[in-house]
Image (cartoon, rainbow, N blue to C red; front, side, top):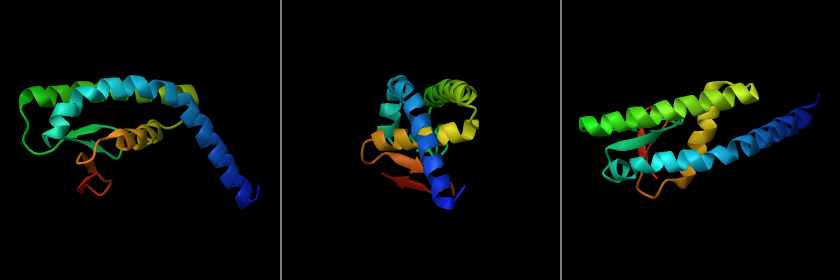
Length: 119
C-alpha cells in the first residue's frame, strides 16, 4: 500500500469511526452540561484525553461531580472502544476534540504537556 493510499485508508477509518460515535456525542454533551457552572467559575477544565479535571482548590461537591462525569465518560469510551475495536484512549481523544469544539470561549483546556490554556 502506498503512503497516499495509507493516508486515505486512515481518513476513511477515522471518518467511519467519527460517524459511529456521533450519535452518542449528544448524550455526552447533555451529561457534560452539569459542568457548565464549575467551568465558568474556572474550577473545572477539560483535558486532552476526554476527561474533566479540577483546576486548583474546589469544593467537595464539585470534585464529586467531576468524578461522576468522568465515570460516565469512562464507561462510554470503553463501550465505544469495544464496539469499534479501537483503543480506549483513542476514543477519549476523539471525544475531547468534540468537547473542545463545543466549549464556550474562556473555558480552560489542559494540553498533553500539562499546561492550562483558555479557549
